[in-house]
Image (cartoon, rainbow, N blue to C red; front, top):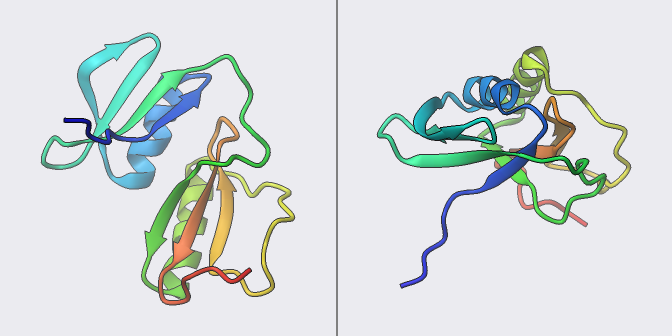
Length: 126
C-alpha cells in the first residue's frame, strides 16, 4: 500500500540545515540514513519528520511546494518569527502577500521559503 512519507528539503549544507531545522522545530538529528548528502530529523518519539537532502540546484523564488509552520496566535507568530530569524532565517523580498495575510514568509539559511501561519487568522485570504 502506498503511503505518504515526510517532506524533504533540498539544501547546500546538510549539517547547517540540520542545525537550523532541528532548532527551529525542536527536533533531533537522527543517525539513521545519515550521509554526506542526507540528514533525517525526528520527533521526540523517533518518528521521521523532515528529510534534508544535498542539492546543487538553487532554491525556487516562488516555490509551488513549501513548509507551513503553525502557531495559534498573532503574538506567538511574532515571537516565532523573531526566534527563527535569530536562528538564521531571513525575511525575503516577497511580494505575494494578500491584503491581510495570516502568514509571514521566511527563508531558511539556504534560501528555501517557508511560512509561519497564525491559525487564529487562517485561512489566508486571496
